[in-house]
Image (cartoon, rainbow, N blue to C red; front, side, top):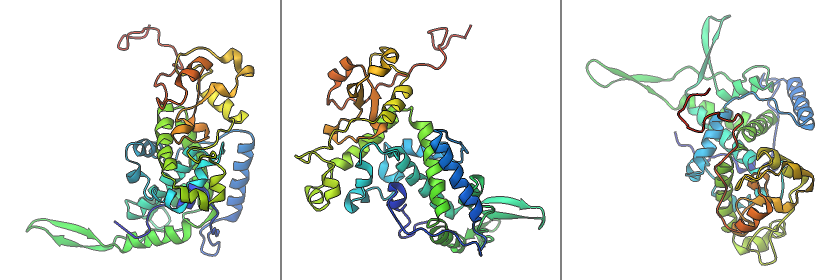
Length: 349
């Protein structure tokens, strides 16, 4: 079902400031104590560098991100507005903890929750009433993540009529009333609430944890953002000082910025301390590695970002050979468990 203004808000993906109001306690939409407790737990876990996976659609969001690299304008609706509205600025600030993957995962998750307003809905049996109740997945997700004490909205009963399509067959024709009620609830109550922001942040963390190891996906996502960076008009740089200072004097690429220690550490351990091109072992040189060992997968000269998702570990020889070539990354990864037989179809011994 098409609705005007149904695409995800760019503020959700970029984390831009927006008007946020908690869902009303009076209407039973949220338990503020639960929200405060969940917020506190999340911050504590972040400080301790741990993540608590709930796996609610983590792989579905990751799968859509993967599909987006071949058809971004279908799987990331509204993404074309990033350069038109200046929201691209949120992506190009260097070395953000809120990485490219975090932002796009929030974008995808929000769009999926929006699509849910058209159904199908999730039925839960109420033992007290002896009947099924229907809920939106986002409400059940808020409960699962400890951000709500109970679903805040019950999907209305089916509304429509049976139409005779032949002398022996009738087909149910659903009206738009139920979907419109769900859409209004999502847009006016869920999307503007702080618990929903926390939920999207958690999903973003989970998706990043799952896909960061996939360098090919990192390359393709950064390649797409690089195309948007290269589409930035000179007039936008002139009119937006915050944007202009991120670029070189010529305005043709982002300024080079040394990866911080946390980004270097993340990439070093993701790539198992090995040069991803030639496989040379760099683990013994961890304390003497330099910025030259951390290569931009999509070069800055090609619109690449200063983002941890756009880094890979290279020995200095391979880095010098690659230089600004947009060749991407290797598709070879070390096995977690070495296969005892090099023949792919041979049995393990």
